[in-house]
Image (cartoon, one colour):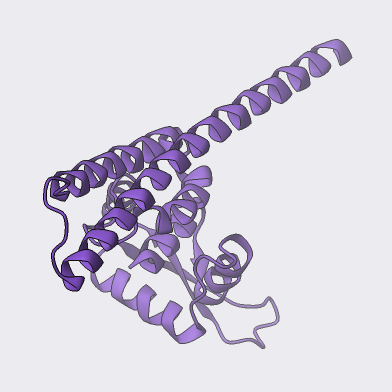
Length: 198
């Protein structure tokens, strides 16, 4: 599922042919999204069929010796679908933080204004998951069977993991704020340097 949106994000930056999409995925999403060549082309075909990408032209070498390639661009519907995915969180049962790094890497170039909102949505989701788990606790009922003990320990483990996920969201928020602050300072310094040269 994430591959569809990784491809949409890349195509929202610029039109590309399938091989260029694969290369860009390898460069930008190392360890987070590693499809094989056939998978990239299957997803491109499905995105085109769904109206999320369209063919713009074909590209080939100037000498004409290479086969002409299909060049894809994202459509308005594709941009809308990408934005909706960036602001969504995985369905219940999936670990929310598993897709967060990929979403942030993709959003940084195609929807940078959403970065903080993406982390906030993940934090809200994590808080809801934690509250659901805590509500399942039965501290007034000590386990009477081994099976009940295992279930109680599993629940307690899930609660601790959910708390750790929430702490991680605080870490992500703080790091993102520091990064943006540093970028703003660099941008301001560059502007001042340009003005001095004039």
